Amino acid sequence: MRDIIIFGAPGSGKGTQSEFLVNHYGLTHVSTGDLLRKEIADGTPLGCRIKSIMDNGGLVSDDIVVEMIGNVVANDTLGVLFDGFPRTVAQAEALDKLLASRQRSISCLISLDVPQDELIKRMLLRAATSGRSDDNEATIKNRLLEYESKTKPVAEHYRKQNKLISICGTGSIESIAANIAAAVDKL
Ligand code: ADP
Image (cartoon, rainbow, N blue to C red):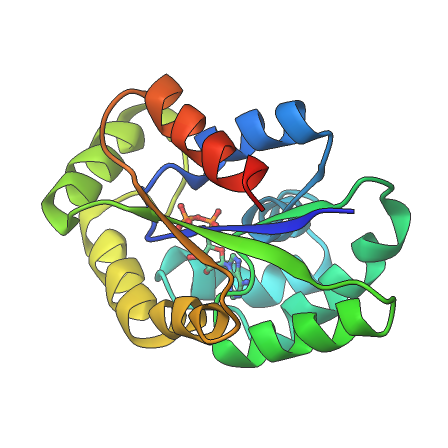
């Protein structure tokens, strides 16, 4: 069983490399961003509550996302790839507890490291095609601020557990994927 976190700033390529990891290791992909966007698209009561938070680039409350995760961790066989979660240390602690209660634990956190000017360039480029209401200049700034203050400490949380793998997130998609696989295969 391999439970892996793909980690990095917005625009760092988590979604792209998630696809590779899911196919290569047969993991179940869990993206909290996708789950939350589905709530909004379906017009659920939860979706109505979280839409303005997401449009402003803020983080949805820990309670809401942790509850979503609890439901998916039971239904996989080879392990889960967590994408966009945990985004706060409180979420990381909740995830550690949830996995421990099922005799599991995180294998590694893969951090995709990309310089900030490159992140902004990528997100503005993506804005043209993604249709995502949070891909605009003002929201992007706020997402990066939220990442620096609340999410970055999650990498430190797993570094203390000796589970941090840092990967350079610039270069070709294939070369980044190869570097990730080499590191994961060594575990
Ligand atoms: P990106 O990493 O490209 O910013 P995501 O699709 O992962 O995009 O997330 C989009 C938005 O969904 C975030 O800006 C945030 O508002 C919300 N979100 C996603 N995952 C979480 C989470 N684990 N905790 C709180 N909010 C989240």
